[in-house]
Amino acid sequence: MSGPDEIVHQTTRLRVLSALNALPRREKLEFVRLKAITGATDGNLGAHLTTLEKAGYIEIVKDFAGRKPRTRAAITGAGRRAFRDHVAYLRDILDGGGAA
Image 1 (tube, rainbow, N blue to C red):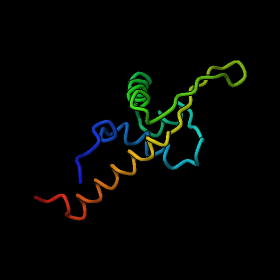
Image 2 (cartoon, helix red, strand yellow):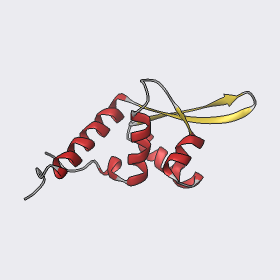
Image 3 (cartoon, rainbow, N blue to C red):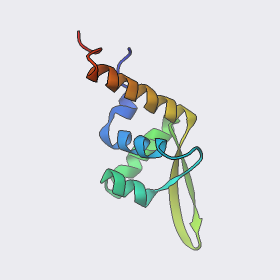
């Protein structure tokens, strides 16, 4: 099995993808909810979301709820595959398959 996906492997990004992967397809989570799930600051979470978006793992949607700006994120097909592959990589390690 290949090594970890360094984009997914980072703890905050792994938490983001885990939360988004648990949602039905095309479902989105609001920035505020992701912030609560990850325990990240606004700036830190924003930077991680940008990294995931540039990798094609998530889609960011900015709109308004009434007059209030809203940022939401959804996982892409590529993001689901990357998350699934990374989980398989971790399971392989836990099952002793990663031992030299």
